[in-house]
Length: 364
Image 1 (tube, rainbow, N blue to C red):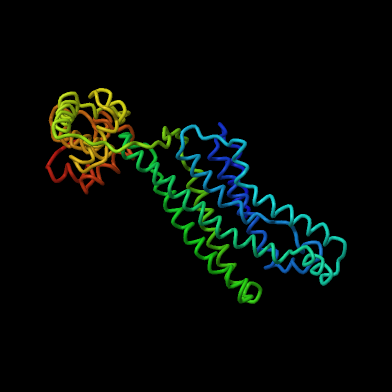
Image 2 (image 1 turned 120 degrees about the vertical axis):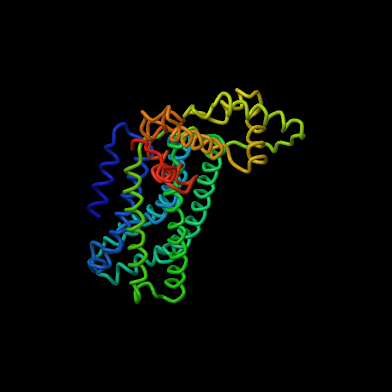
């Protein structure tokens, strides 16, 4: 909990302030509160009058926070707006009820009377409803987050050739882990409601919160390390393009010219819009031709050309004065990490292995 609090403070104090850092900080703080709930029972503080019914109704907070965090990473110029608060309305409602119960129960130190007062305010019934809603909320926000990541990935592969652009594969992995978390929640809650296993077999909730701890700390660790990157993604609907054989051949001819003669892929910032404008066709037409004729998306198509350029230059004496990275940067890549990753993905080997197999004496 202490590490989570320190990490949250570092995120909140991050300069310049960014929405994704702020949201990640609140995710960590929410987890700390949820962890405190289990500590109350583990340390038997629940049996202390002043701790019983302490209002900690934050169960419906992490789900929308994670979705908003996903939006802040994958959406252009994302900002928290007034209507964003609607995502937290269910949590506020349950928290108000929890505070009401706590205030009423403060009238006495007798545990039995406290329980009777709480039951008179339908504490257990509303708590069960909150638990069920947590599962429903988890499923809904999981689907929304998954769709957002998929839309971003599709846009990235279709429009952007810059290999250093974040693909957020780690975020997708976190989302998969979150799906498992929701599944565990779907098992625990019915066991507690219908079989009254909540108090007798508290270990099931300890496992749930342990899993949540690992997941959130991983999210905090990786999220904190992410470099500030302003993506240009804006969700849009692109109509299906139908082209004649003649149109396809014309576009392919212009595309080959741009690739083979003008070597547009040497521009590290090349995107679908710029290339379509240069060729004189719409983005939809160019994307359709690349998808259908080359069985590739725009991102892979351009990066494959860049890799071929690197391979050519690595084996050409005219470039022997350059290092591997120097050649990569001149071939359209703009970072060492993205170059090595793309080269290995496309060729199945590292640049050094490629040189070794081709008996080259290039400097490393």
